[in-house]
Amino acid sequence: METLDFEDIEEDLAIKLSDGDISAVLTCIDAVNRLKTLKLTNCINIIGVGLEPLRGSSIIEQIDLSLVENIRVLGLVRNHQFHVSSCCPFWIALLKGRAVR
Image 1 (cartoon, rainbow, N blue to C red):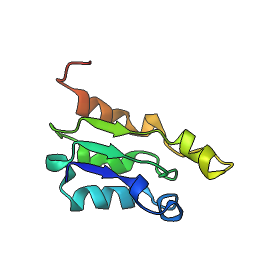
Image 2: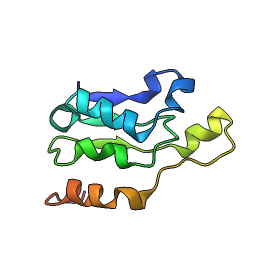
Image 3: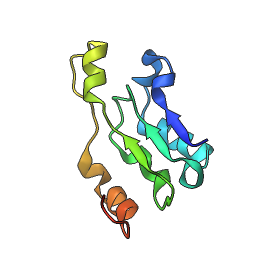
């Protein structure tokens, strides 16, 4: 599996997914070694720590975190839960040694 796009699942399910759910899916599909693109469409309850199974990936090319627009489309009044500070160690490890484009 090269792409995992949560837009492909029903919105009512996507908005209920937690970091634990995302982590379990990424672990189950061996995402660190197989996943090139991850799109977290409608996954508004994650804070970001569920991305940990991607740590050390040398093949990930795109992580789509465009959550805010999707919240407006769904008509939800609360903001997404994603916290960059929760993921800083992950992002640093992921980008370490890579040239920024």
